[in-house]
Amino acid sequence: MTDRLQALSDAGVSIWLDDLSRERIETGNLAELIKDSSVVGVTTNPTIFAGALSNGERYDEQIRALASKGADVDEAIFEITTTDVRDACDVMMDVWKATDGTDGRVSIEVSPTIAFETEATSTSARELSDAVDRPNVFIKIPATSEGLPGITATIARGISVNVTLIFGLGRYEQVMDAYLEGLEQAKANGIDLAGIESVASFFVSRVDSEYDKRLEALEDPQAPNLFGKAAIANARLAYKAYEKKFAGDRFQALAADGANTQRPLWASTGVKNPDYKDTMYVADLVVGDTVNTMPEKTMQAFADHGEVEGDLVTTRYDEAHQVMDDLTRIGVDYDDVIDTLEREGVEKFVASWEELQETVRTQLEQAKGTEQ
Image (cartoon, rainbow, N blue to C red; front, side, top):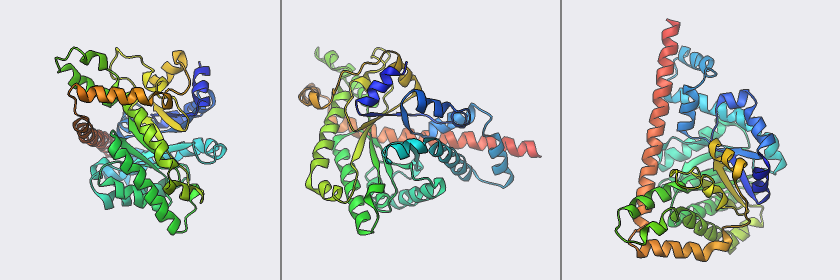
């Protein structure tokens, strides 16, 4: 079952699990995935934490302690999530050491409610990093226009960042520039650049969902031929942009001082359309120096029947350009698709955060009721 995942890893793809719970940590499940399934990183989000809290009793003791000291909902969320991420970082520490800090990473996200507040984002990133207090933590910051200066400021402090919620190529260029500016500021601050890592989380499946919806509304007979093509083409062109940016003089000057590239991370890689092959957003985006963060269901599917067919990214740039040109020609506006996805992406993140808040609020109230 794990030979296929090993082949994926051997092809230069770092396999990260898009899930975390206290149960995974305490039962040894996360350690088993590292040992048996080539997992070398973990990503989290509010929905993942809400699900973990709803489905287990392993948080009860901490919830009771927080309730007894009068913690409010946001304080409780901060304590609960940073505890899980700190413990997961400890589980991942050997991987972090073995890969010289490239992998073995665990991501924790700033509150999406401040996605449009630069200073609040920067402050929250620092607080999360200080609370987790592990060298292998990644702070997730959304790639809104207001988030970009927060990314730069966080990198400038020497804090490693997972930039999330990237859909479009224009925004991705800005993200890479924000990273480079952060490195330049860190260098000026006397920080060792070799200790700073970053990934840029480029969302995949949601791009197809939005494009396919628009294609279905067209009466053009060519539209069905383009279903399920946009997301992979878009991601391939993102990797082309990555290659160009980090081969440039600006980064090479930083690399001479030990700076690391900001690897592309393929996010949202579980298929939304059941008609599509369940491993397509993994198999069709195999290329070196990338991360693929997968829900466990997708990881298991690839372990069972995924195929690694070599580099399917840099060898397909012409095809990717053609797909995007065809989509434009048929009448689907790229910029409008990306604007819609960015707006809805933040809205979904906020809804997930509110779900997490409600879950924690309910559990705090139940804990207080038990005490009385």
